[in-house]
Image (spheres, rainbow, N blue to C red):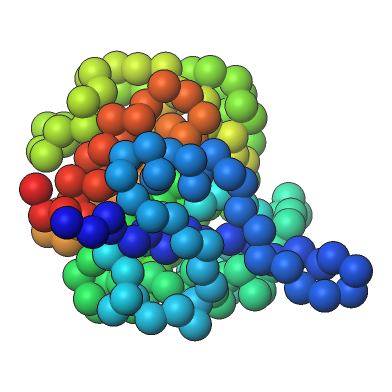
Length: 216
């Protein structure tokens, strides 16, 4: 049986005056470890030739995508990345193929489905979400099983977060301060974590994603 092909979103940068599509190797390593073939991709790729989509972390999504004007703390916006991620989401959601969003990727999934974001969570919490370990707790029965406990310590690194949920999404985990840290669709194979499981010992979440890809 051939290995599943997983498209992995990348960020756009300039190198010697030319655009470069790049991706941190930790994402690629985790996909390979659970038996997939990772391919860094942009929005022009054909979802029909791949089995799943991993949307990675990155800069802020333009508030125009959730019908807001920019606040004062937005940073690292890249319209090319926005267009690419939403084109990928359009293709994979239409094909009902699995999508796993991490950090910015979870936010993009929420926005694509009609949700919105807190442009900056500084006014909502005194907790540090900037790569400082903090606890999260499950909000309801997860279904499908990630192999992670009801309460765990995670490593989210973000100043934005999911606000209004997109259509069909539910909250899986919240931080102790109420910030949404994981979401999933009620009927489609779409889910996301605000934290970065690729950087800590949570390969089980990637195994869960691969089970979705394989239809287990």
